Image 1: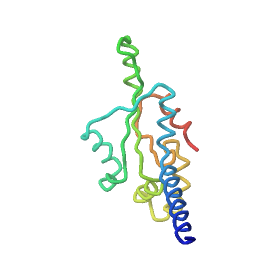
Image 2: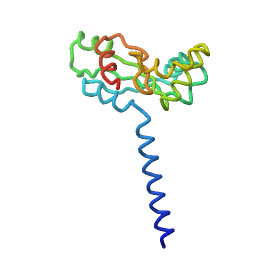
Image 3: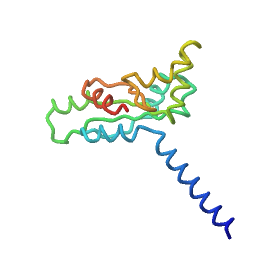
Length: 151
């Protein structure tokens, strides 16, 4: 009976650790939350466009990368100026499966000497927050939102 009870508790503990680990890997949820608070929403983009953005990081990242596009919400009856402002507030964010995956991809583009310093250096960049990379936006405000999510 003690072995069964021990096995059950061990299994539950392992499951809990796995859940916490998987949930803690991505910083995208906090980034998306920050943008949502500022009136942005995630939008779908074509596969062709996602492929072009993915190609910026190299051919071998397709399995480790998710492209997210967020756009400032605007009412249907908004004037042309508000709609134009919303169009320039589109943000593209690349989410790697983990911070380790991000570091591994970046190490491929630096010298062997710099590989040792890369982990610390990457997270100091304004365009990197956890496992996410700020790819593009025309709006300074959207960049400031992203910078506010850095830990």
